[in-house]
Image (cartoon, rainbow, N blue to C red; front, side, top):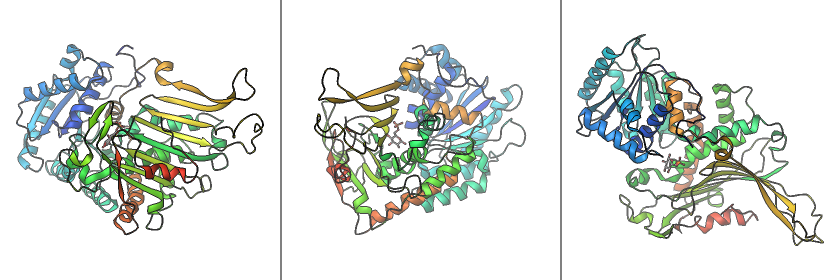
Length: 508
Ligand code: BG6
């Protein structure tokens, strides 16, 4: 596949300056800089694009530039070309300061002014990317305002924007508080909250698949669907993020945001139009219809696990407690499984099983819709047992596509039925590389399109649901944190969540 083929829309944004707070951190290295590089290769970058890195590292402008080039070389899916690197990083600057130091914002303002003097035509629009730990979000936002950087009058085509990474709060109260602080200094339309799952092509496709095809909607309900499984399994452990993970855990890290997004997209009602506001409203309605998990059902409907040492890809890997930055008696969960009900007419009594964890057997994110079995087994005289139920699998990653499983008669045999799969693969059909999630989101932000960015009301709705679980986990009826072997599919309790109802996770 050639690097210049892409399915990204061909729109180019106005001149932009992107200031990255936390410019020398992991997220910047692994995700942001490679995404900027891809946009450059695809010709989707504005004619003028300036990068200003801001962090406490003692870098000169050129040292930061070298850092950025090596990050792209290391983390890009394919070997970058010197000419594109040169063009991308020709206007790269650095401000070395702590995030709470007025002096740092003065230096930043000066750098921005110098860049503006060099820019022909209207002033470059500014994007402030908060790629820092969440404890710095408020102080950066306040300092940007105090430095006069939250509004630049009519000098640029677009008003300054702020991109805020997750985690957005750690419970309902802190998420509300953060939203209130932001609202003091910036207008809502200037804020772009990231959930990078929404930038994934396969996640965006969920609504297209559901609402651009006539045949699924009539059967997308409790009459035809037995249950739904949503899995986001990772082989990675916590790596160098031990400190963050100890404060977060998997419920906050993965479920509150990414899994709730997948759940709401697959289960929401059809919006009246595809406008961001209408989609948002349906997603919030869905989250608000989730049956609360409280002390009554927390032990039957939730599982929390933590990985122990094990073997993955024939390599021995340590347990969570032996990772860097983890307390020896840590009670942080690295695996969560939930049984969730949506109390509305479409989904009443249809269980949605969600699971996600680290150090699991395989990297796979998918939504599997298990349809009800046939009402009567007509083939009992020739077969042992009834046919399997039909399953539709929305394959989010890494093997992007859609599969449908159904039963056929095995040729030549009157006694055997077999389940076969119809498979659609993005790679084979479109012969183009899918855009990286961050590539799409950064481009949309430059184009002032907030469709794929969660809104504050949606985030608060999701936290309202998750906070109840966090609270129930503090209570006496909480399920214990059970260990699972690295390289497995999680704790036995997660299997039991299904098997006691004669259902099974799609493992392997
Ligand atoms: C991040 C989480 O939001 O998503 C990580 O903080 C997780 O812990 C990652 O590994 C998973 O993203 P992806 O795109 O690799 O599925």
